[in-house]
Length: 235
Image 1 (spheres, helix red, strand yellow):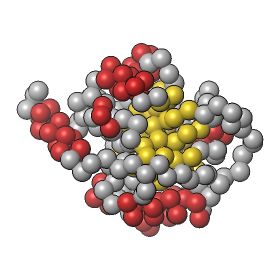
Image 2: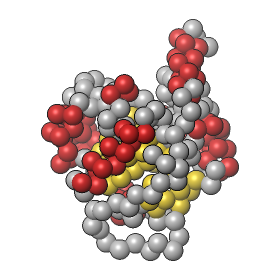
Image 3: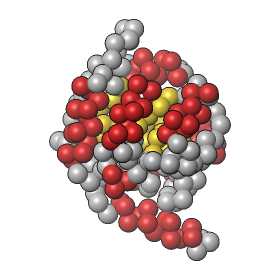
């Protein structure tokens, strides 16, 4: 996907005031993920340095970091969780409670809905990274609120482009995120949207999103591997 690409969501919703827009990275990991060493303080510093107006913390099977960061940050923080289901990853946004891993996709979605959360599909065609199998994706599509169409850690641009086409053809809201596991990656991909106050206003704003970003360099995956090793040794 070329630099600073722009995609406009197609889902109809009530009009938004587009005179003010903020950058929002919808996929960030912290030291509460097993493959990241990024402190909460480093997340805040990086977000401020890169001009983000809000972000979503989506740690693997954890929300403690997101809850803590929400109390610390001078900008809105969406409580998210990248949940490993029995078939692949699903992100829940605007969560209040932890959702356990290894449930079926339908059970996971039900848990997200019970909390009033949003169902967000990350890196949908990146099968090297726990993407849902295509038959499963089609089976749950009517319960999906938004799809990640630009993931900065996806190595093949064609996979992001495929996700963008897939979402647009089906009228899904489009999101983007760095999938940052290090502070240097934060803000590498993001949406620009009108400011939001809560879950519902976020949905309205996301319908007016433009998607921006560039791929991260492949070596960032080595940092995730090192973080797993370091934590496994009790570091």
